[in-house]
Amino acid sequence: MDVRTASPTDADNISALIKSVARFFTLHPQGVGAEEFLRSIEPDAIRGYIAAPNFMYWAAFENDSLAGVVAVRDASHLYHLFVGEAFQRRGLARQLWEHARNTAMAAGNHDRMTVNSTPFAVPVYERFGFTTTGPRVETKGIA
Image 1 (cartoon, rainbow, N blue to C red):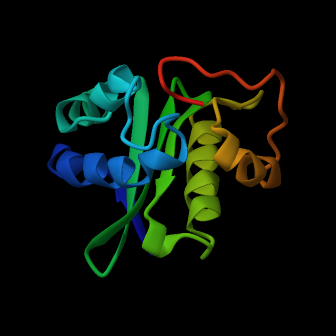
Image 2: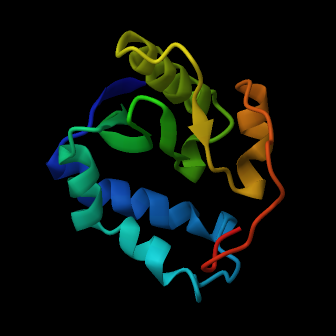
């Protein structure tokens, strides 16, 4: 897997990848009620994250196919971590997490990393060492 810094030209594919797995965390399978979140993963929004100075954003490719993405905000918050269905259960999420964590540590974060997880992803984040600190929340169409 080739992990590299995402570029603005990747935004369309990143948006499509995230949308392809959105049904795992939206309360309604078609995203009803989650319009605000869905706008936040449109290509223009993704380009904004990639360009923002407080974001670090990477994309993983296998044979020129986008397999996954990871983003960290302020070197302390895991903002995005998504893996395409065809690439799941192959260790890519861990590879992306470790890349993001190591880069955040190199940028000065030696304290902790936070994440807002969907119920679907809690087991994955627990395997990465995260612990649940609050109750399950359902808001704006997202669990």
